Image 1 (spheres, rainbow, N blue to C red):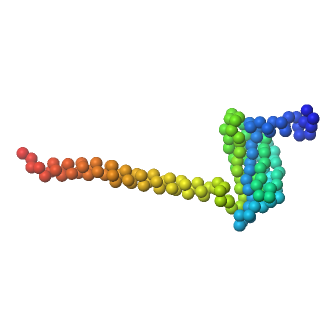
Image 2 (cartoon, rainbow, N blue to C red):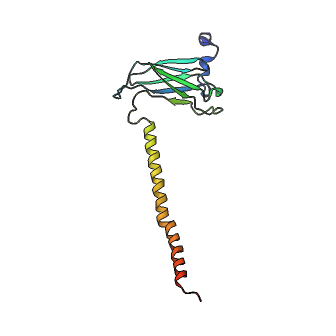
Length: 163
């Protein structure tokens, strides 16, 4: 194996397997949403003291690969851009050696078409409203008439004289 001693025995080859790979990607944007090219991004796993330094492309996107194992699931991972540091958890299922292990960390405003926490809150709000409206309609047209029938039956029994 030529060049294996440069990186360490087998370390470079192990990152090609899903169970040894955790990819953090994202975008860096200015306050007005423009991409920031050639920005230094440091992705680190403090527990193992491993880090990867990458630079954003012309579109402001970056992708960094960390060598993490099943035992590292749930560990903190830091992403540093300049003075700003964001900490995430290495969220993946230990033992699942087929699903890619990835995370997305963006800096700056999100761009239309990219996922954001605000868009999910919007959809959850709509879903809650639909459930509430469905419950009210059920109560109005299904549950309420049954209670109305019971009340009317009670009134009828009170109107008829007892013998």
